[in-house]
Length: 129
Length: 208
Image (cartoon, rainbow over all chains, first blue to last red; front, side, top):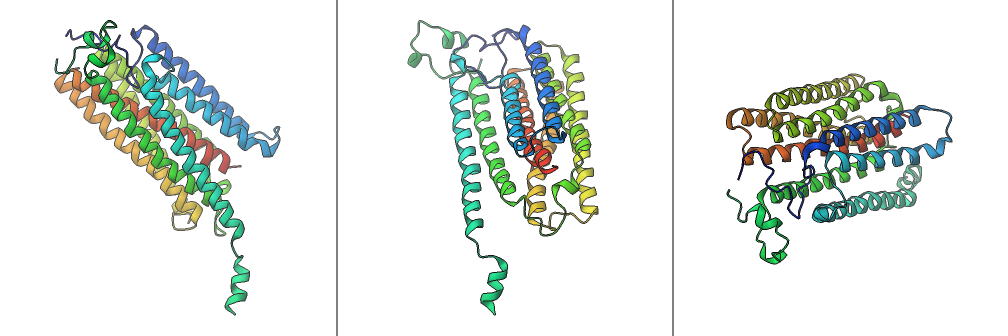
């Protein structure tokens, strides 16, 4: 094997984080990713600080911007794509996302319910009397 | 080459997939590390969930609105974003055998990562100095464990960066060194993704 070649460059699988077959577009990919990430971060800071937006909607807006930025990082920095050679990485990512969603939404849902059904501290004091 | 099958065999379309043998080592190693990173993200999601549940329980103490300084957090974010960028460029430089470029990129990555860590430690010290330590309220316990664990990851990343730079200097850009470098860059980029979630959920939503 030659020292300089990229041995798995044209194989049917693709390692996460590895860049494309030729390296010519890679610096461009990182730069585009950085610009997108900076724009989205700036937008998040502006959205969180401004008073021009309808206040109850700001949290949803921030969540959308944050998720968009995570997508930018996955595509441009970790080079996760929808290509044929990337299937295994995407399947693993999807399973991870499923577990993350279950943990987050499940905890919030259950704890909100428990919180609603909890006896207020003043009532407990009454019972102990 | 120590891979069980050659890359040329593996890519040959005329050989059926089942007869091509195991995938090249670089792909197997990076895939395994990718699965580790996903499990790490799942661990973080448990801490995120507990923070989301506890963020309102300040026990009469200071809330995020009183404690967070967004300018400080903005500088931290810029440090991490640019360090992710320079880390990517450093790995590319090694693939192209431009060793000088690698050293410059990784030195920048290290400085940016260390700046981030320093800012975070100074923020923690300021909060503890104000009497808002992790034992003050459930909100602060959740905050310190979540943000602190990310900080621990960054510290491990900085150590790993030093080891990798040493290994490249001593052993040169051999296959196994480049595989480790790929894993390191995956780790560093994943930390950035977790920081985006932290920034949005903890700081930007909490400072309102």
